[in-house]
Image (cartoon, rainbow, N blue to C red; front, side, top):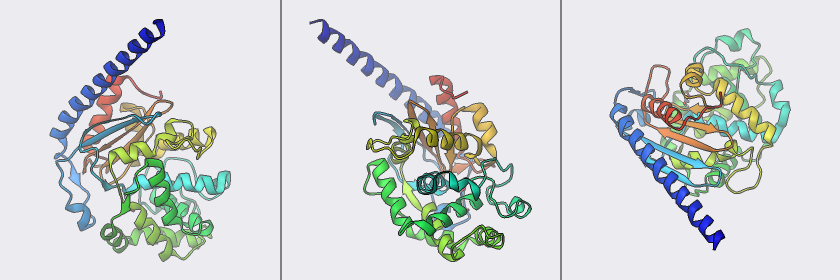
Amino acid sequence: MLTSLVLVKTLLTFMYSDLKLNKILETIAEKAQSLSGKGKIADYIPALARVKPNQFGIAICNINGETYTAGDAEKPFSIQSISKLFTLIQAIKTYGDQLWQWVGREPSGLRFNSLVQLESENGIPRNPFINAGALLVCDRLESRLSAPNYQLLEMLKSLSQNNMIKVNQQVARSELNHGSRNAAMAYLMKAFHNFENPVEKVLESYSHHCAIEMSCVDLARAAVLLANKGVPLSQERLLTAKQTKRVNALLATCGLYDEAGDFAFKVGLPGKSGVGGGILAVYPNNYTICVWSPALNEAGNSLAGLYALEQLSDMLEISVY
Ligand code: GLU
């Protein structure tokens, strides 16, 4: 009798907090939606320039897989630079600490596609989340894995438990056609003997990664391992707790382009953004959050997405600091 009373009480508490969380997400989504047209859509390729600005989605996934959503949370979008997080996970899995001989762990303080430091720092990219660093990571994956692109896609399908995730081939082709700066970075690294494979081959993989489409729900689910000491929803450990701590530290210091400091100040969570308008954030030991709204601020981060994450962090009093 006593046990069933306790059970009913626990169930009611859960239902109450679920209701509260859903309400908070809806309130935030409503306000964020009104801001969603305010920024500027990434227009360096036509396929991204065509995305409608007035869209907003948010999803939270806790370490048990329970997911809470509001707005356009199930709509797939171009993950762009958020792919850098998952290729880094693949590279850490493949190389362990050896990876850090070839790529650094410091914020760059420069634009994500700058060539300046690469020249003065002997072809060693500052971190894996700027373009040079991500290209380096793709290069090393190309050296070791038999089918790196296929394996990345399979990893994402398994992490998010969604078999429908795919690459938008049109976006991938446009990325490649507009990839001159990326090609320059790769060749510069090659000149410093820090690039092993043919540049064109690696650029093609990288373009495919940027063109993967996932929804807020997919991304929040895929990143659960970072909130759960390396264990994803499938319960098959992918990273050690120490590797997970390190990935989160890199997200916190380098994940938001040149706005990582401000993101730490306002939101206080490790995160990764992309020019498709997605931002993925991790609240370690608890849950992940993904927001999406395609219009960007001047730093290239989703304007409404940043607003929503700041509101959520304040309302739920979540921060790693
Ligand atoms: N496809 C973009 C590039 O390599 C990625 C940009 C981003 O999301 O930061 O330029």
